[in-house]
Image (cartoon, rainbow, N blue to C red; front, side):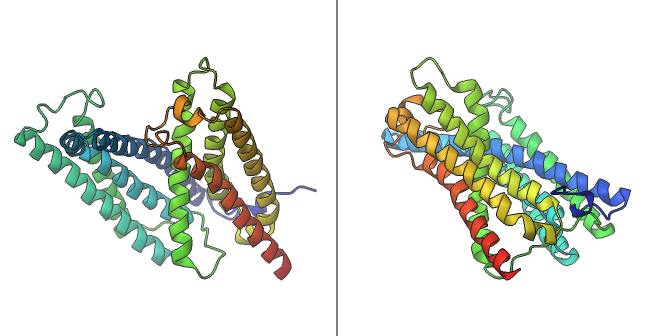
Length: 326
């Protein structure tokens, strides 16, 4: 007996055009999630540098760095707006919600993009940027920020034109939960940030972690919990939502049990490695952020460890409740 079959998928009853639209929405979510992860890291690096300058009693340096880094900071929020547009199409809860939410996020992205371009031009004339190709923090900065913003403005305009003249008929994934909309939205936003952090944490660590420094177990454990934080988002947002509402109700409990087992296992290995290397967070550097490894209590890493556990426990409770009601 197969656990899943074709009829369980939300795309099972769609025609070829609808399946193509649904595939484009899914790919867009994945691409924009990756872009959001990297721009999120740029944002956090800027924040780390500013905090580091303030701690070193160089408030003027912190202010200078903050002013130069505005395009990087805004690029994250612009990309996040794009991710929200793609996610709105991906969920497609209803046509009315899709149009309202997609238009709102597209307009936000366009406005932020315009601000980035205007800011760079103004700061160039003001002398803050000596050139459009200063070469720091990237070889093409701040010109690359302008180009990136221009691309998002064009994409935002295309979305608005599409919503005005066309209609989206891809897969529909309406929520099977009722009530607590604000609370769910708030915690989903935090969960998304942890997922973005975990994705880039794992990716950057491949290139940055020095396994010769005596902290191999801790480094590997840190990479594992970062990967699990990212996979938790991927499993519950992509795999889980690939099924119909009825199938989602049925698989919530078994999927939650697997998710919880993986989360508990990775957390156990992390704290086991931490016990052997209590100074691991400060010395390994794991490669992501100074802000995450500058304190004896690594709050950022604890969030990465705890979030998959919390998500899995919540899913487990929901699964048990749905089983009882059934």
